[in-house]
Image 1 (cartoon, rainbow, N blue to C red):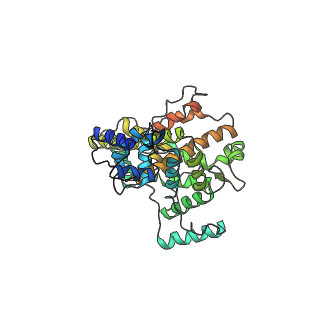
Image 2: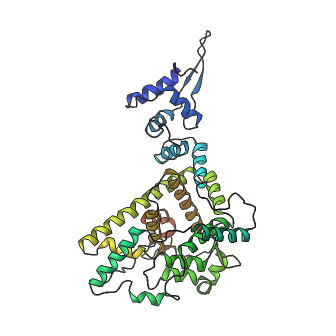
Image 3: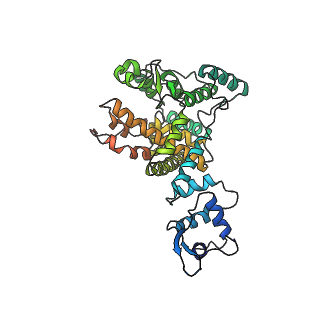
Length: 396
């Protein structure tokens, strides 16, 4: 087809774009978008008769897609990024293209040694440890903004004549004291978990402590570390023979994420995309609200929410958000897949261990509010007054 004389069907799309102010959309651009599987082809309408050729019409979804592509699909934009942005807006991007973009996002999660996948796992971990040491690779455990907030809260608490964290927390921690994990240890643990799909309870507890270094005690970390002793039946159901927590199937986590990218219902991917965005916005908003209270010299509801979550998954979500100052579409997609993975693990545990106290997930600070919303079916099943939470703020 000549790019100078668009077909009648393409002219309809061009006119549609121009009417909405996108006058730079051309027939050539339509061709490029189709070649990248971002825009479906026109639908044949049969012959016109008497040698006049055949007619065609745009697919119904093409009209909305053309407007979205005009917004996001400019020169130099990565096709996968464009596909994800359009999908995130609820536009009808071809399913194959969406799934390919999510799969490509998993490819951004790399571990040294990926080019030698057949290496013995133990040898690979040894080589990885040496590489991390030689290259001085580390993981940021507590971003600077979170440290400043922690320090600001502690300063105001001390000024009011109280202690933070409260000493009473030590009664709920069987292993009180500072973490021994270093940023290099964290880098190795994260890489090993990605490769093997497992992590020891000791490593998980140690990392939880390292990500809250000012805490004199960490009850959540203690619960993880004492799982085998405290709830042996639960431990037998979820731990491997060598006391590792299996993060789903015992294999490379990225393989499982690729499977989710290929098979998870599009509705689930879209919901997770939106939830990941909501979690990020909630975390940034919480930081801003706490900082306003600190600037005013008065701890309020935001500081309470921060302190409640600092020991649990809500706090981890805040730390993760602050680490990712830029949030490109591929990282957004990866976060969405990890969320689908996490939700799937909750439901797998529900099958493996009947009677789990899922209503505890409604406790304030345990989960980011947008994530908690996705688990209401589990939480509400047996919810005797859940959600009240525990106010850990010092008395004024």
